[in-house]
Amino acid sequence: MAILVPGGAGYIGSHTVYELIEAGRDVVVIDNLQTGYRDSVHPMAKFYQADIRDEDALDNIFRNESIEAVIHFAASIQVAESMSDPLKYYDNNLYGTMVLLRSMLKNGVNTIVFSSSAATYGETGEVPIKEDSPANPESCYGETKLAMERLMHWCAGAYGLKYAALRYFNACGAHPSGAIGESHVPETHLIPLILQVANGQRPHISIYGDDYETPDGTCIRDYIHVTDLAQAHILAVDYLLGGGKNDVFNLGNGVGFSVKEVIDCARKVTGHEIPEVIAPRRPGDPARLVASSDKAVRTLNWKPKYDDLEMIISTAWNWHRSNPNGFAR
Ligand code: UDP
Image 1 (cartoon, rainbow, N blue to C red):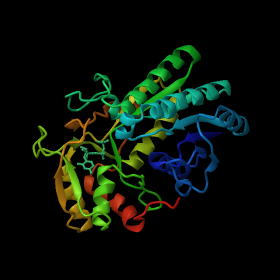
Image 2 (image 1 turned 30 degrees about the horizontal axis):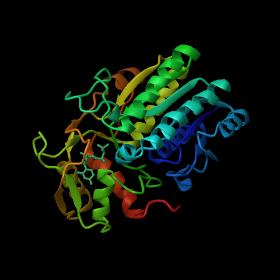
Image 3 (image 1 turned 90 degrees about the vertical axis):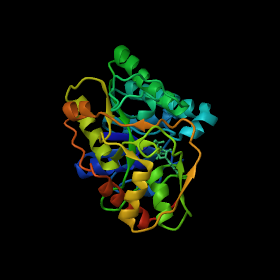
């Protein structure tokens, strides 16, 4: 029996596929390759280029393959783009998930683990944030992730769907072998942008606001290594297959770092100067987002290995230094 991974050619999806294969699991990947990369898919995974909104394609895959569960990553992920093009986000994220669920259930597959996000919370003011903190997304992206969670909830009641929603905080780092890493076009995330400065591809890193209510005035985030996120998906799928109950889990390290601290750490890791420039705040950025992941630790027996920012940035630097232009298209 195989695990089906829609979005398995993307950043977190490809790292999860590597961990699944390394754990001896059979994996089938579906990706439309609009933002994912064929080269990031582990050579031992079976690959279909397909879109999750294409129900006939999904039905064929479920009929041809022996699928025991789905780990679903296929989604659009840019907060700013979601504000200027909400229809794209409802279509790809929510409608895409509806089609995927319909095809799963029709074909007798009822277990799904999927990417949710800390963006479902919005500004809670709570530190750390627990799963029962109020969810008031500030972006259309976060709203579609919350809507996906609610869709699963109702499908569980109506059709017996088994689901786990994993709310990631700030995913970062790269596979320790350097085989795969983070590559977005355009890149909007802090750590890859800092490393592009270290690589000489950008003149400086812009700090989006230094007048927040935090000790150094810059935003605080909880940075969690992509391999630790990948492990949580495997634990969650096995938990559900073993009879565990449907639930929502935060995934973070529980430690916050400011933008300035991240830049300083990257200077140490890379040995490069990394000039910084103070820029205006980015709309929709809460001052502080730090997770309590106690539930995942307790319930899934999740043990994040990369709890040190220097170690996390080192794995990212290992990838970016060798692959300054990311994957080939
Ligand atoms: N950030 C920044 N400069 C950049 C990119 C990001 O100062 O060029 C800040 C951003 O405002 C946020 C933090 O870095 O406080 C992490 O941003 P990222 O986009 O990596 O993740 P997010 O927290 O939005 O999911």
